[in-house]
Image (cartoon, rainbow over all chains, first blue to last red; front, side, top):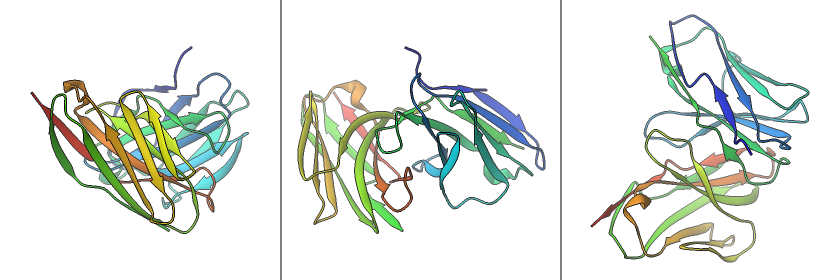
Length: 112
Length: 111
């Protein structure tokens, strides 16, 4: 079985641009969560989606948005990129909301 | 809100046992997770505790005391490949699905 897959693996963007990151959960998993991880810190929760609805939101500005599709894949969008948005963006999927989550390999975003 | 504390760094010798502690404060506890993260890679799931006590899985064990807001991860028979960051995460009952992570404990295993 394929694990959680994320694309792209690496991305370089300029300040002010917009970016879309994609995540495909493990087959059968209905919940997807997004995290931001800055070097030297633990992952910070951004969003959780379950059954195509937003079920949880972390302390991130409105520049961050996400959605989940009928096949349970998900996209994370970040508008008006700032240098401080440079980080590893992790997607995690779980069968339902409260079970253990399995992470994808992440997307390394660099904003210059 | 939630606050999680774990040591920043630990060093141990190959073949030894190491215990990584995690203390937390939370407004609504709904489970504690341990993840392993090698440099440049994604976290991988190690263990999940929701009730008090010890959960054992091979060389790894995790303990939880909800009344004390305390957990530890025990690694036995350390191997060089165990050198990694170990992340403690607490799930929030009031914000379903949200897990708050500590900043991780970087474990270095020396020969």
